[in-house]
Image (cartoon, one colour):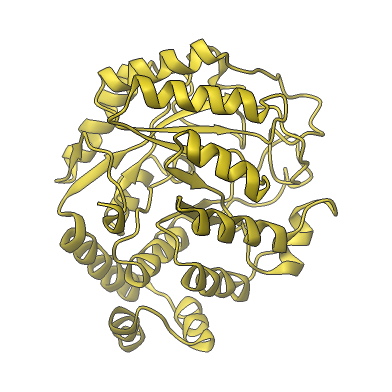
Length: 347
């Protein structure tokens, strides 16, 4: 297995069967070797700097009905909300005062936020905080819409493909959604000039190791600037409520593989990882991650953005979250840097 890891380090990829062999035969010794190598590669690129992304969950309305998601359109138990432009800008001010230099405007596919409204919000964010990067995470839109948001000031776009296997994708989504459209959106975003992020769930229902290999190969093909993966966590109001959650160690193993494949990528240690394991975000960093995404949303709405059960940090003030994150990062020998943290190709 060490031979395959070394080959991956050298070539930045493996053959399909080699990836599968690596995933099938992971053990503690192999994992520790991989984590150590990924950690050293991350430090070669970024030192021990960790970048913050201030998450603003501005709407939990969604037109889609993804079967695993707590804010899916068909969940009648979800308590819906939308933030106003003024509330969004207030979140930015709080975050900026705390040292955040990237804001992630994330929501369901809520068409009540028209292009005109979104463009106005983006322009106001960029005018008020010109030293900050703006990341959008609002799902699938047309090429023309993506261009509008880019011209209004959005620098980055997060759109997780969730699974690159079409059969698996169809088991997780209604017929109205298409994996090919998802992939085309990612290609459009990259062509327009966004710093593009994608990713997938680890341990989602019906996922196989072969599915995970397809995810790795798709990411190699796409060449994203950001890669976000986290363990699947079931939600009580979905058809997958009784399914087991994803595995933390497999998630770490995949983070490290992705770091070897993409040395300069911005890879978060996700909230889902921290929800599954009290030290999950620290473990993510020690596996090659270099980004954290604390929540800047108003406390009054955090529990309503309920993608999965038992999500952490829903009751903490932004300042409290900020102090906690900085202590946690410091405890493992890393430091938060108050910078935008662009992908090196955009520096």
